[in-house]
Length: 108
Image (cartoon, rainbow, N blue to C red; front, side):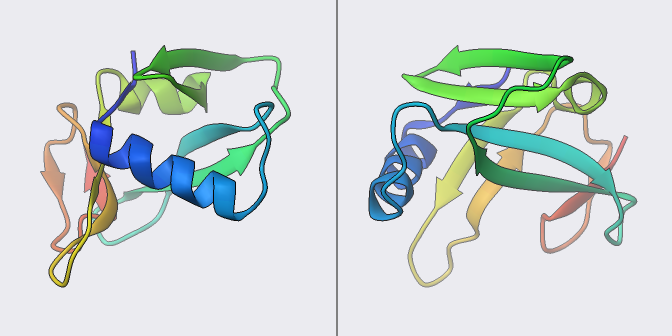
């Protein structure tokens, strides 16, 4: 399961409305190789499902990931922190053994 915190939901809805994206769009998250800790998060809006997609709904938001990424993201919560010292979107991932200082990459 992938989870969406209230703060992330509010920000996602604001961004989707600002870009004029309709109900057919969802949040796609994935894990790619790279970053200072070895693996990086990627997040986009999408409206096309792929054959091996894992689809989750939490807090009224549809979140989709590919099967390979889900192995790293299981039980992860997408969060958002605003303000002057805010991180923006970030992932609270219980599977990460360590994260880099900027929070954009991790290792398992």
